[in-house]
Every structure is written in C-alpha cells, then in structure tokens.
Image 1 (cartoon, helix red, strand yellow):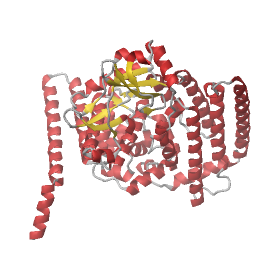
Image 2 (cartoon, rainbow, N blue to C red; image 1 turned 135 degrees about the vertical axis):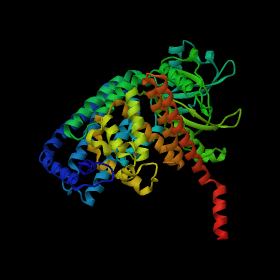
Image 3 (spheres, helix red, strand yellow; image 1 turned 180 degrees about the vertical axis):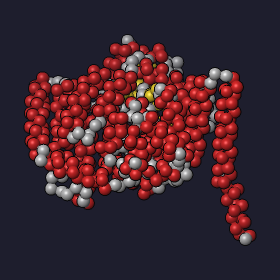
Image 4 (cartoon, rainbow, N blue to C red; image 1 turned 30 degrees about the horizontal axis):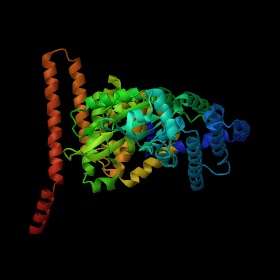
Length: 552
C-alpha cells in the first residue's frame, strides 16, 4: 500500500501515473474538436462584446476599465484563449515524448503571459490573485510562477488627484491641512493601495497608505467573474480544481480592503512578539486612519532579499534568516496568528537608528491567518515528525490534516523536499540544486494530484502553504535554506506549543509539573545540540583541526 501511495509523491516516477494520463488523453481526444469549437464560439462572442462595448465607451468618453462588462469580456476572452491552447496544442504530439514536454512548457509559458496581461489590464483583485499564484513556487509549474512574480513590481498607480479625493472623502480635510509635506511620488505601489511619505505638523514623519479609489467597488464583482470562469474551466478540464483560490479570495479580500483591520493586526502582532527586540512594527496613527487610509510611523530599510544592501550596512545574512525563522515559528506554532504575506517588499531589514542593532521591519498586516487550536497542534506534531523523519507520525498527522492517501505528496509539498529527503528526516539531508529542479519539474507533472490535495486540506492550510513558499524564497535568495538553526527554532516552538496544550488539559498540579519538567528537559537538549553545532562550526575548531592535521 505504501508503494502505491508513494507513487504520487514528488520524486517518484511510477509508470501507472503515465499510463493513466495517456489513457485519459486518448479518451478525451474525440471530445477535443467539439470542445475547441465551443471555445471558438465563446471566444468570438467575448471579442464581439468587448469590441462593441469599447466603441460605445469611446463615444461616451468613459474609462472602459471601470465597467464590469469590459472586465468580464477581457477575462472571458483570455480564459477562452488559454483553454483553446491547451485543448488543441497536443493533438499531433505523442504523450510522454520529449517533444510533448517541450511543447507543454511552451503552452504553460504562453498561458502565463496571457494571464499576466489580463492581471495588468484588469488590475486590483486580479493583480492580488496573480501575486498569490506567483508565490506558489512549489505548487505550480515554474513557467507560471516566474512569469507572475513580476506583478509585485507592476501594480497600477493612482493619480494625485485620486489620492487627494480619497483623503478628502475619508478624513474631511485637504492635504495641506493634515500634512506639512506630502511626497507625490509613492514609496511603493501595490495591487490595492499605494504608500506616500509625509510630514505631520508636529514634525513626525509618517507613511500614508491610500487605497486605490475603484478597488473597493470592483473587488466583489471581480471575484464573481473569477468564480464563473474557473467553474467553466473545471467543466472543460475536470482535473483542474482550483476553486479553493476563489474561496480564499472571497474570504480574505474584504479583510485586506479594511485598513482599520490591518491596523489592529499590526498592534496585535507587535504586542504578541514584544519579547523580540529585533522586531519593528510601525506605530499606527488612528486619528488619521480609516477603512481606506492607514497612517503609520515611517520606517526605512532595505528589502530582506537585498544582499547588497545588507553587505553595505554590515547586516549579517544568517542572523536575519535566523530571526525571521524565530518570528514565524512563534506566530505559527505558539500563537496561531500568522502574517501571511511575507514577500520581500513587506519585510525590511536595517540597523536601528538608536542602538545600531539589526532590526526586521514587518509591514502590510492586512492578511493574517488564525489557526484553530486542534489544527495548530496537529501541524506542530507533523513538523516535529518531518524534522525527525518519523514516518508513522508523518502519515498520522498528514491524514488528520485532511491529506488522506495523498499524505506523501502533502509532506513533499509542505517541505518542498523530495520523498527521499522526507523519509530520511529533512533536518539531516541538505537541499541540493538537483532536488530543487526535481521538485519544480514534478509540480508540473502532478498538478491534478496537487489540485486535488489543495481541495482536501482545511482552508487554514492554504495561506500557510503560501507563507511557507514566500519564506523559502527569501531563504533561497539569502542562501540559508534548510539551515540547522531554522529547524532548531521550529522544534523549540513546537515543544513549547505542545507542552502548553498538555498543561491546559492537565487536571492536577503534579501532572502540570511533570509536563513543565519534560518541556524544560527537551528545550535544554535542543540548547545543548545548538551549542554543539556552534562549537563544531566555530573558527577555533577549524583552526585546531588544521593544526592537529599539520602536526600529524
């Protein structure tokens, strides 16, 4: 049974999967011309609607991008073009050949570029969802993630007239009444808002985050458009089951569009992690904040993936990676309140202006995931099992988290490691370039199984997977991936979380004391192991080893 289940895990190429895929391809081949014909008609209709609407709007001198019919027509035409490409491109190519895989890569790339154009044209919610997809490095084919990553730097910019209008409507005053100076060029532009540097009348420098004026009105309609089109694609391609993407957008978009919610999240995480002096969360100015405007303390720094900035300012890359791991392990395993958008633009590093110590500045607190206690505990125990290579517990807790028989695939997706590395214990096997290439290749091969898996697991898991991929991307850039310190920090937080849960269930003081002693012993062992690794890697030991070798 384990062999059969493992065939779907990354790194396991089983001929039964290939045969199944070939059989399905042949079975559907007779239906391809009919489906392609339907798509051609839909595409033609969408183009006609789009063109006639454009002519009407041209005569009315309206911004065509504001109308739902235009946005829907553009999205429908793109969806039809992508679907038609996938349905017809492989008709004369034998499945499984080198030509087939090369062609499939080209179709993935073409489709990703069409999707990118759609996101840039429709903006707002489309860019937000596109950014989400671009972050799923180990869940989607590389052609999609590498193409969509540019959306982080291609967000639309609102004009100063629009910014003034939002501030006037929400705060009831003109810019000059609120600020001594207000930089017209934004510090950064995102899918939902842009940030301007300003100075208050009392001399304090602030960052003013202003929502793009049309996003609020368009977002709910855009999500409906996405839902309709994804259902149509699922009807054409039953293996494509990405409805979880729409469900997440429905749940999270209203929260992200409420900047007061973002401000409360910022204050909560700042209090929650106050024992980490290296973490800086900008102070919120509530008297200048509304649902569409968030005014906060201005904090400068370099992006967390900017190695040149760190080198120039004397910031230790390994120290940053370790501190980032501590923060997120604490958020995920101990508190279950997780900042879910740690892309490099939201995580800055700097030397503190006062004490010159290294700081991490955490920005953009609109998207948080609250983990339910039972889920969090199972997730803790799963990671402990993955670190230690305890396969019986890997299976048990993966199943409890909804993976079912796809638990080997789930373990590989969660860790972005091969099945071989998972079996050995991910803390004991270093990440290699060939393993990374294997994982990315298999993400394309097993897309239907991954899609099925993402529809099975609890919704809480989806944002965690995105967060994991974003953090892995940062570690890869910093060249600190799978470091021993990150596993030690995760283990430490898992031990604390499980012990806290056990103490809450204990009915006697004696039992609570026993749990506390066991926790202290486990943490002490980890500290000793960490000390051993430090001594082993220290310059003194290298010097002593070289000296002994020379004497010998």
